[in-house]
Length: 367
Image 1 (cartoon, one colour):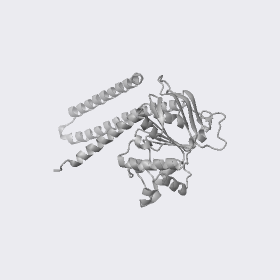
Image 2 (cartoon, one colour):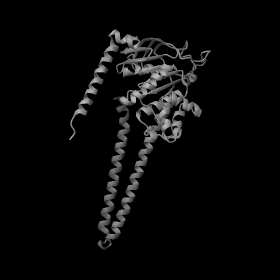
Image 3 (cartoon, one colour):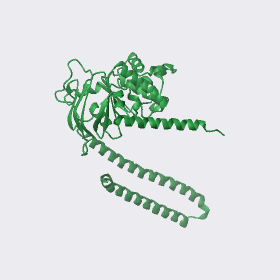
Image 4 (spheres, one colour):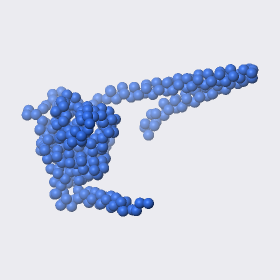
């Protein structure tokens, strides 16, 4: 509502100017046509038709001029908004005296009484979150939509500071950690990935422009993507098209994982990495994720809706309304008959229903 009220004056000015321009052009056109047909000799109507054609061209250029004015005004407004955005002071910045682990980052993460609410919102998204993750282990967060899973990922990346509580990376408070170096040691693969119109090698290098060919191939192998890349006619130089249109969903996702792994991150965040894939593509990507967990290449955080993707996680935390409802291994949570088990039963029933519908569709006679 506030946005509509702020935009109303600009809209009213545009509407009035547009109506006035239409009225002026229509009146001017009527006067010229009236003058032509009143004072011209019928024997010269060929000249009249030619003059009319030229007038139409003049009016079309006049319309273009008015459109140019509209575009200039829109550009002026866009420039004003960009300048306003550039004036915003980031809430998360490099500390004046940044700290860094003496032995380098290993990926040990601890959350102590973390509470979070977004600026301008009074409702707490996360409430008293406590968890501890050993280096090179995998922890998964599950819960209903809006339970705070993605907010946790944003805190770990460093996009926001917690409203209350602390996040420790290798024993150092994230607020005091060298922010610039930390962002180079983490990687995130989200549900919506962005690929570019270029080669496979160029897309992988976006995360590390200085990566060598050997590093690119190593990252593709870690992501189980080298197999399909090797089968292409040009290998690393294969063009994938805008947003990777030449690749399947599973191939695109594995390429995104390879782009994250080329940096050799100490912390890897997979935010709904398989939720938009079909069953076959999900199986391909899931194999990649399972291999990453087994090889202990990084400390892995998985944000998941599909519970089948986190069976091998070292620890699963179930969030409910921003709080930890229960935690433990997959086997322990299944045996506890708690909220996780309810989610698992719902997912199993849903998948069974889908399978039943497919079988019924296949059994229908074709005519």
